[in-house]
Image 1 (cartoon, chains in turn orange, purple):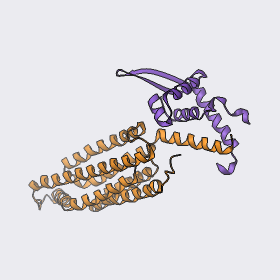
Image 2 (cartoon, one colour):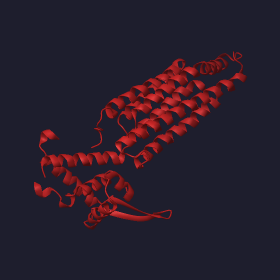
Image 3 (cartoon, one colour):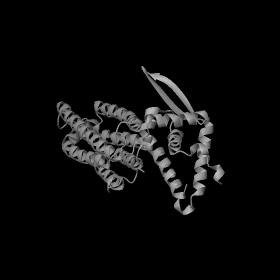
Image 4 (tube, helix red, strand yellow):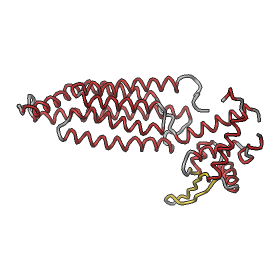
Length: 222
Length: 97
């Protein structure tokens, strides 16, 4: 055996250790599409969100009659929920599609043990966060929803990063910081949400794409 | 230094099996086959060899009605694999590592 063979052995071992524990086919383009969907969704949601928020704030602080009347609450809330559901659907479909496409090229199946581990570990905190946000709406605290979504999502990503690409850890931490800022700056919460779910997704998605997916050779898999 | 290299890990398939098993709890046959890209027969013979020398333990059970065989490293196997990796690393010129 030459030292070159040994180098190959080590690369082979390292590759197997990584591939058997982490899901590496996650495509950066899924981040980009999720980010674009989030920005459009937030733009459409803005008037409805502000209506809920101000309505809520005025009622609480001065007990003055709500400027929009509480019967409009459900209309605005309905729009927000549908808008949010569509953004989520587009983001998930995009992630599945681009990751499936990438999995075909790298040869790593899209639904192997590492993918299942990633999905389960992300889904548990996210589902709990989803119910938490519904409860916030239910108790008429819409101003806290952007912060809550950012924080639960950040925790889910931070936790799931053990099972996939390292960039996810930084994306998770960034979402957490923004979530805490959104708690303090309630007036700018929707803008902060748009930065977290829109701009950061596009930024990290593009970063992952340029690092791992460009070029003819799949350099990350020996 | 050569004698530190473990004969049991001469084969690339066995190295691969150990690499996967040291970082995972119980990995089944199908998953190993998928990760290593080898045939059933080839994989089975290497796994049997590792089992005989006590580096790998086997668990056979049923999931529903289908038999499922999973593998895990033994303490001795894990230690032997790490020593083997250390030995390989020492043989490689520093600048390449």
